[in-house]
Length: 134
Image 1: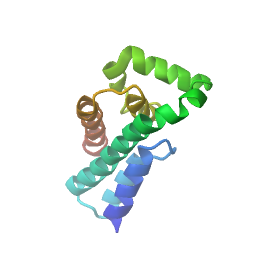
Image 2: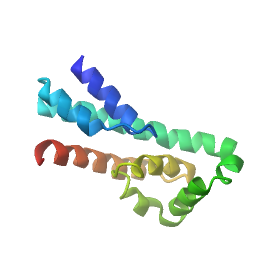
Image 3: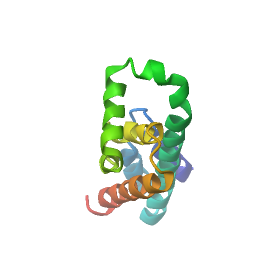
Image 4: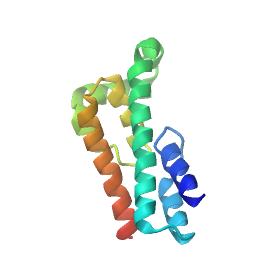
């Protein structure tokens, strides 16, 4: 049950919902979940969510393009995505801006394989640092 809660927390935290998976990660370990298991569960949940974000951006962009371009924040995010592409993904591990960047990656049609390698590696690295070095 602890692992499932952690998985859901990590998944939801990587969507555009304001949620902290790091708090859930610490809580799961404090509740008795092994650190390696917690790392695996949180990473899988978070990575599946960024994949969801990518494809949400990929498939919904054409249908919502007109509306999205009217929003100043979205227009700015798309500008960053188009101009900086994979370099912008280096910020995808950060709170607040990281999750929208995974959505924008799909909107601007970044190569999925490169997107996944960059964003997933950074997400797992963040959990490793949080779990083992704090």
